[in-house]
Every structure is written in structure tokens, then in C-alpha cells.
Image 1 (cartoon, one colour):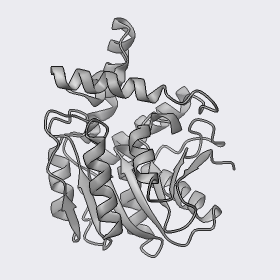
Image 2 (tube, helix red, strand yellow; image 1 turned 90 degrees about the vertical axis):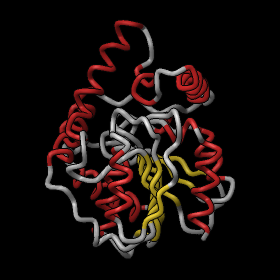
Image 3 (spheres, rainbow, N blue to C red; image 1 turned 135 degrees about the vertical axis):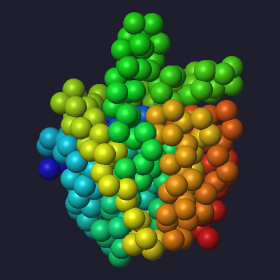
Length: 262
């Protein structure tokens, strides 16, 4: 099975594997975040099974996606990595960190939450509503999913959309409808699971989120930090939602690099 991926930055050191949000492909990572991290770290973005240009069919459980992520990491020959998981990618990162303690050195969890976390089972319905609204208003659903409706939020959203168009060659394929359906099912299941313990995750973890996240409610970041034995919580980014780390990319990259290098 082929996993589509891109490598950025130096070719030495512990690689940082980036795990994207629901419905996202390689081109949904903010280039300011990827390039900022890659200035000092080996960064690898990849499409999990069935996503974008990757082969196979997308699993309908977070655990299945986590096992595929491990398969991808091992196929590249790495015996230790750091993880950055955004939203659904953060769910996957938690499972990988817990199941593969020797493989994962440090973890960054952004705009995400634990299994059974507050409001996570409602994420699929919110995403579908935002997509329909976007189609009716001819407005990219990213604007309502990732950003607040304030002047600052709208400005940050438009700026991200411009950055996401900067790459013009070798772009990833759009995610298929069957993969979206599988991801929606997986996220709903994650949200309906018994609340996860997380005391077995012994790696250092950095947690970041926007203070007005409507998709994965911001309380989940506080909850994650409280449950993880070795966690550090970035003060919640003001006037920002599910795309908090994109809206405050300079601050996030600085904090992420400090955490990874400490």
C-alpha cells in the first residue's frame, strides 16, 4: 500500500510526523506551520490509508487509522518519532502514543480532545452542516469550521485560504466521499467511547487550542492537559476557534519548537 507523503526540512534528527484533521489532505496544512517547524526539524506530512493520493480504503475507527500511521512510520524505517496531531489527527496521535511508547518520543495535540470528550460525538453533524451552508452561500466551509465570526476571525480565515493556495504544483488529490464517510463514522465512535484514562501516556505532551473552538469544544484541551501525566497547556488562543494554531502560527511554531527541543 502506498502512503502519499512529503518531507520538509533537514534530513537528520527525530522526525516530526504530522497527522491531519478530518477531511484534510496534504494541502490542508498551513504552510506557515509546516515551513516554520521545518526550519529546524525534519517534518513529514502524510495521507493515511485511502486519504488523498494514498492507496487502500479508509478505516472507520480511530484505532484503525492509528495502526496505519504506525505502519507508515515503520515503512520509512524510523524507530522513534515525534507526533503533531490536529483535531482528528490528535485522536490518532493519542492512540499511537499509548500503544507504541517506544516509538513515540513527544506529542503535540492541537484543537483536539480525548475519547468520550465533551461534544466530540457532534463533530460529524457540525461538519456536514457547515459544508451544506458553505455550498449554499458559496463560502469555503473552512471559514465557519475553523474560525470565529468576529472581524479578526474572518480576517484570519481569509488569510489561511490564501496560504493554502500558495502551492501550485504536485498538489494532493481531494479526499473521496467514501473516505469522508469512514472518517465521520470514526469520529462519532471516538466521541461516544467511554472517557479515556490517558494515565498510560508517559511521553511529554504539549496541548494547544483556540478559546472559542465550536468543533471540538475548547474545554477538551483543558481536560486533556489534566488527564495526561506529563502535559503542558498553551494558554488558549484568544478570539480563535478550531484553526487556532493556524491563526496564531508564529506563536504556535515557536512554542512547538521549544517543546520539541527542550
